[in-house]
Length: 235
View 1 (cartoon, rainbow, N blue to C red):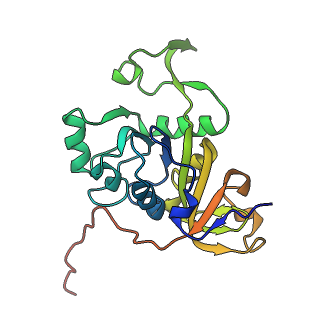
View 2 (tube, one colour):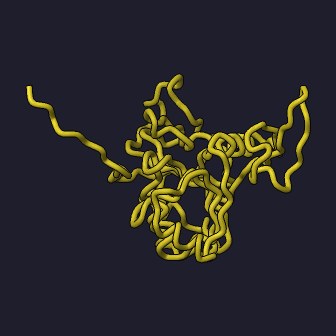
View 3 (tube, rainbow, N blue to C red):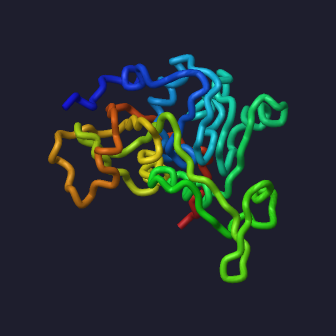
C-alpha cells in the first residue's frame, strides 16, 4: 500500500487543488484549525474556492489568509464575526455567503459523510433560512429540508495520528474535524504527533484511517481569538 505520509503541507496538497474547488476546513474559531494546510492552500494559488467551515478565521490568520488573497469566492458558514476583511468583502458584494445555524451545518456535514442526501429539521422554520426550501409537517409540526454537504477536499487537524491515517483529537479541538474527514472526496490531515501504526489505542481512535488519504506532521501557533483577563485580587 502506498504511503499516506507526506513531508510537508505543500506536498500533501500536490495534485489535489484546482480553481473552483470546494474545501471543508476543520476547526472552531482558531481551535483545531489546519494551520499549515491553509497556508499551503494559499501558496498553491488556487482561485474561486468554496469553503465550508464554521467560521472564516481572523484577519491575518487561518482562513483569513485566503480572504486577503481573494482566493475564496463563497463561504458556507455559521459564524464569521471575528473577521473584518470578511465583513468588507461580503458587504461590497465580492464574497458569496450561505449562513447556516451551527447545529444544522454540523448535521449537513455529518449527513454528507454518511451518504445521506438530506434531512428535515425544525431549526430555521419560519425564518430566512427556510426560504425556497421544502417544508413538511411531522406530528403536527413543520420541518425544513436541509441537504447533506460534501467537498472536493477536506483539510483537518488532529492531535495525534499514525502512518495509516488513524486520528485522535484532543478535547475541544475535535469540533468539526471528525465529521469533515468523512465528507471530503479526499481528506488531508495534519497532526501534532505522527506515530507508527499500532501506537494508538484502538479504543481512542476518533477517525479511522480509511477516511484519511494523506497525513503530514506540522508545527502550530494555536492562537486565541480573544484573550480576556482580570486583575488579580489582593490577598
